[in-house]
Image (cartoon, rainbow, N blue to C red; front, side, top):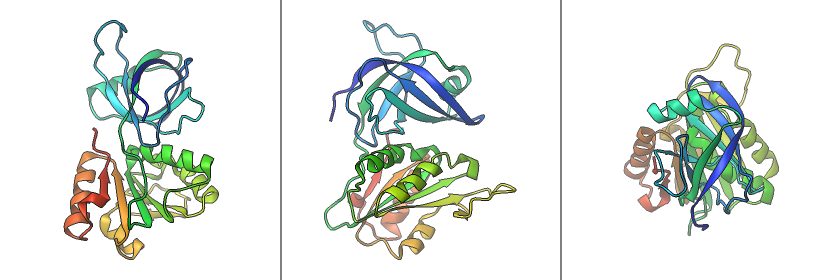
Length: 247
C-alpha cells in the first residue's frame, strides 16, 4: 500500500444532511497517492507548518475510490469537540491539511468464504462507499456475493443509499438492505426495513452465517456488540469478523 504523505486540500463542496452530519468534497491540486478502498486520512483544520509537528487532527474514512487522484469525499458526524469545530467552522474555499492513506480495512475474500457481508451503522458506511465506488468502476467484487446491511436513525441519514443502489444495478452479485430506526412521516422509500439493524435480523435474512466473512463499521458500541454477538451467539470464527476499529 502507498506510504502516507501530508497534503493540502481545498474544500470544494459541503452538503449538510442535518446539524450533526455533513459531507465534504476536498480537492488536492497535487496528485494524491493511491488509496485502497476502506482506507482513511487524518484531517486537521488547525494551522500547520510542514517543518513543524503535526497538529491535532481526527481520522475519517474516505468515501470514494479516489480514481482521479485529486478528489476526496468525507462524511463527518458530530462526535466531540473537534468534529464539532469541523462542522461549525469549515467553509467552502477553505484550505486545510490532511495526511494519509492509512488503514487496512479493505474488503476482500477469505478462504472457504464465498459470501461477504458489510454491516454499516450511520456514517460508518463511508469505508464501504469507497469499495462500492471501486466496484462500479471495475464491474467486479471479490466474492460470489457481497451484501451491504446499512442502518441509520432516519431515512434522510441513509446518505449513500443512491450509491448502494447504483452498485446493485451495475455489479453482479452485489446487493444492499436498509434499516431505519425512526421512520419519518411521508417516507416513500419502499425498500427500507423499519427498525434497528441487528445481528438477529441479518442472520435471519442470510439464512445463517456459514461461509461468510463479516466487515463491521459504525459507532464503537455497535462494533463491539455486533462482533461479540457474531462470535458468541452465532459461532462465527473471530478471524472472519473484521472491524473498522481505528476510532
